[in-house]
Amino acid sequence: MSGKGAPELSVRNVSDLRVAVIAAQWHEKVMDGLVDGALRALRDLGIDEPTLLRVPGSWELPVAAKALAGRYDAIVALGVVIRGGTPHFEYVCQGVTQGLTQVSVETGVPVGFGVLTCDDEEQALDRAGLEGSHEDKGHEAVTAAVATAATLRSVSEPWH
Image (cartoon, one colour):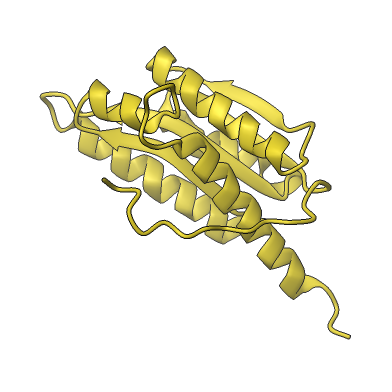
């Protein structure tokens, strides 16, 4: 299971952070789980008014993240790519991963990576945070992005 070894993140005093969630529309059931997990994580953190933006697919996540980066303290990208019989899977996964990394590094805005890259739909459902799922990657992506934003904020504040 890929969740082995995940850190227990403690995130506090972040209710004032501005967070945007960008979610693809492909694989509706999986995406519903990811979005629900992300929004639940934000509520748990006291972030009551996040922005939720839907894009057609995972390929569109980086450009949307780039457009929003200057207005938010953290961005969470949610999507799912399921392996098929062509190299399309590798190209999309690589492009999305590199694109989201580039946005984060160039802008300094943390981008939570909630893009599932799975061999089949069963693997995706098991990570979507649905009832019976073993993992909740939407929730995890929010927690990671917000924890990173809080860490960055703490190092940018004046030292006393």
